[in-house]
Amino acid sequence: MTAAAVAELLPSLRRLHTQWVLLSGGEPLLNPDWAPIARLLRANGMKVWLLTSGLALAKHARLAAELFDNITISLDGTDARTYAAIRGLDAFDKVCEGICAAADHGAPPGIRVTLQRANFLQLQTFVGLCKQLGARQVSFLAVDVANPHAFGRKDDFVSDLALRPEDLPVLEQLLNAVERSHLEDFRSGFIAESPQKLRRIHQYFAAIHGQGPYPRVRCNAPEFSAVIGATGHVQPCFFIPGPSEARISSGNAPSGGLAAGTDLVSVLNSRGMTALRRSIRAGLRTECRTCVCSLWRDSQDIQGATRFLGAGSAAPL
Image (cartoon, rainbow, N blue to C red; front, side, top):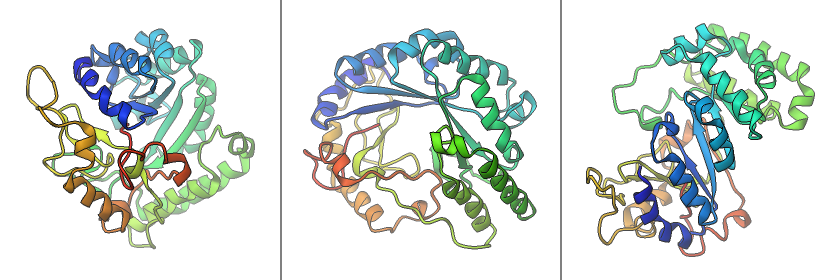
């Protein structure tokens, strides 16, 4: 995504009363235009959120702290060995350095931990490590192994990441221990989820093995947000692909500009996207039934965003 492409999006973003824009990767800080993009959005009254693997954050911590209203870092292990086994590279110390650097510059980040078989035993250790590094908050979710298309997967997806049946009693004991020993962290919000919501992770992995239903999902994210890929494809959320014609850019065009006559408002109000949101709202999408990352906003919170679009559409992230 280029700053020029984002500049062409600005009229649509303003019409949609966009409040937040999330810059996501991998590592968005490897994009040479990340700072101009952030400045452009801020200059137009929007708040900017960085979702990063943290690999380049130490290098850019001072400027990132200045330009982003919120920073979230993915951290998948509490030691170098676990991190390398999951991520495939030896970068644990570099990510921790980035967390500390952001905190030192006045922007303590939130930490997002994806629990899976390789790291679930470190559940309590994550809480202590995040405090030690100066994080603002730590959040946990289950690794998504039920949706083969989650987070832009394109290859055949066969996963051994899920907890096995024999791991489930161990996870339950760990959740009990965290609830007993971190009451204040739950009360203060340092642990983002409530104890009850954390237990949904156990329920999810149990459901993978047919030991009960998946946790009930309540989500209306496509009513107030959308995902714009670097090639211009638009999706209702990270987990559900949009219609093939739902795109705002010319894709491979060197300029990265928008295709003539198409803007984000038009795409979100297109027949295909409207029908897709309707099916999501009716509970007809299987991806939603097993979602690990649902999001709900009350109607009064999203009224402004839906002013131009009517029910079922809103501002992009």
